[in-house]
Amino acid sequence: MTSGSLFDDDPNPAGASPGPGTPLAERMRPRTLDDMVGQDDILAPGRPLREAIERDRLQSIILWGPPGTGKTTLARIIAKVTHARFVPFSAVLSGIKDIKEVMATAEQRRHAGGSRTIVFVDEIHRFNKAQQDAFLPRVEAGDIVLIGATTENPSFEVNAALLSRSKVFVLRPLTETEIATLLRRALVDSERGLGAEQIDIVDTALTAIARHANGDARTALNLLEFSAGAAPASPGTSRRVLDLPQLHKAMQRRVLLYDKGGEEHYNIISALHKSMRNSDPDAAVYWLARMLEAGEDPHYIARRLVRFASEDIGNADPQALVVTMAARDAVHFIGMPEGNTALAQAAIYLATAPKSNAVYVAYSEAAMDAHRHAAEPVPLHLRNAPTKLMKDQNYGKDYKYAHDERDAVADMNCLPASLVGRTYYRPAGRAFEKEILRRLEGWKDLKARRASNSTGSKSTPRHGPDLETT
Image (cartoon, rainbow, N blue to C red):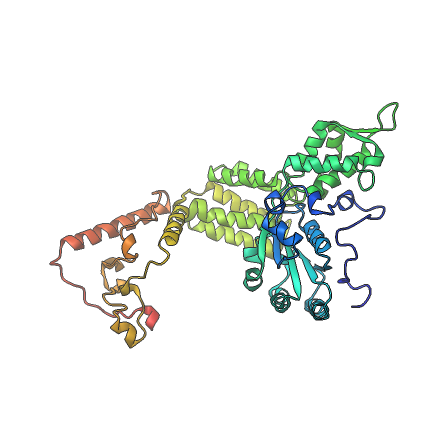
């Protein structure tokens, strides 16, 4: 591999003694598993991931979590602990050719008895399908250990083939207490932190930084460094004091630069949901604006609005899903900031639409039954019968073609035998679901009358093949 390549081996994957001018967050990056703060549910002694790392038995993994939770740091520590060659990839700068070059080198090193290669792909969700597929042969052959890091749900953003060969570990946002621990560590560390600068911070200011960071260690350390640099010296001493008023001045000047995820990200998205659910358009558009103006990803907001349209409105106003999908497309088409009004239009529409969670409840109950009755056979009359053997086995027997029946409703059970009579969808009786409820009750009455009138004439089929067999 040529010198100066973007993919040269990292000579020190755990990061030691960064040079002058390196940001505090980089200087304070943990070097060992014991240095890591938070993530005890996956990294505490005895946990499977830690055991695999310490025994050098690690297979390919995906680290999923919000920014500043330690994904990159953990990947570097793994490489150090396992004495592996560490190759970081940029999802923005690298292409298929670059990937194949590194894969070929990894294969050669493994066959020559060299150290294993850990390929770290930050923001793996930004790789397209072809780029992700390029890793598969070497992952399957064991030539590399792939560590992918993503802030997006890997179920949707990572290829199924690659995901099936990797173990996903979820990194959670750090708590305020954990963030405060990192801040205090930086304040007393004279080698890598701010210990030599003699800074005193009042507890209220430290707590405010920890809260404002919203679980992001990088954000917290960057804010501490910026605020400490502007802190005035205490009269008569060489020590500087960082208090709450001084911190607020620094935060006002930096908020849009470092608070990319939005202040109290999870609290605000919750407030947006609950304001729309409570039919409050003013609160909904306010929380939406708070998120967008703080730099939140508009596509994330669009996804939440689409989910809300089905979960909290459903068939009370089927147009809600159409509106939110159109808003998503508008954001993709015209970008930001112009797309903000499309999101605002959708949020206001959702807030003022009639509400029903009947679809959400119906699916939740049906999913529970699907798990309980996973092996429940499909009734014979609902099965397709494209072959003679299937017909001889009574596949499709007694199937009734709905279009040949009055109101296009046949007297036929469509649930498995053990679930006959089960009701999942119960319309709320509001808005359009009032019409759906009228239809369902009418069909129920029609079937009841048919059952009580066994002498009624049978309908004559006009046509009736199962559409799936044509």
